[in-house]
Length: 277
Image 1 (tube, rainbow, N blue to C red):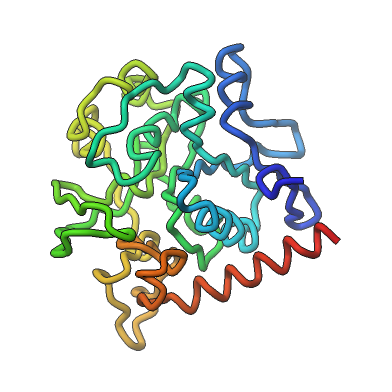
Image 2 (cartoon, rainbow, N blue to C red):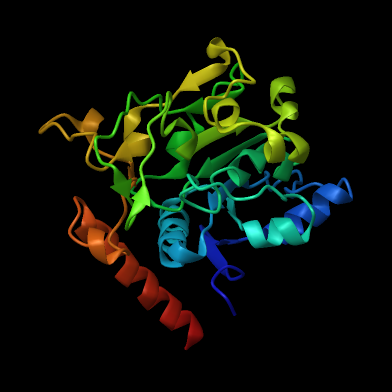
């Protein structure tokens, strides 16, 4: 059984990952993504951007979330190939798109059936804290919430040779909490996501500024940009973002916090081997 399909036990409750194929079929039939009853609340939906070049990064990100979560979560990889097969994504890939999910990420509210809160995150994250802490920061008055970085990288390349681009609100869209039922987010239909400009989407131009809530930077701690201040726990990362490339790339194997990711990767592999046995 693939690790994308396998269940993970959290506090005695099994929580499964779901493929974007299942999500698309649910949307096309007006079905609900989440499961709900009087005693079992809907799992918190987490969509992770998936790129075949970074399969291991995805797996480790997913593992780090599930291992530390004290609440039910539902992890969904956003796979471009499956979205295309289901007629949800047809946009041609541009030369400046560093990953397969550069634009498909904005389908998150649609994939969540415009219902409740859901999270999108790039696959190059390592979670060090309980997702419950993050969910507790949610403000229902906001349409989205994210870390509002002031980030202008000096590097010209990233991620094993990919061209680095600089634009306003860079890295804001790499991790977003979406209030999927917010009226403004209903703008994010497949037609809009497949046709609108990068500026419109990555700068959240369908929203007014006051509708964008702020999350502490430690939930999107940019390697090479954000710094830990000794004896100041408010600067300790809760989610490390290897935005310039992580140790799964040979050229980045010695990056800052590489040892933490490698340790998590080794633990993930051991856990996977036990399941196979």
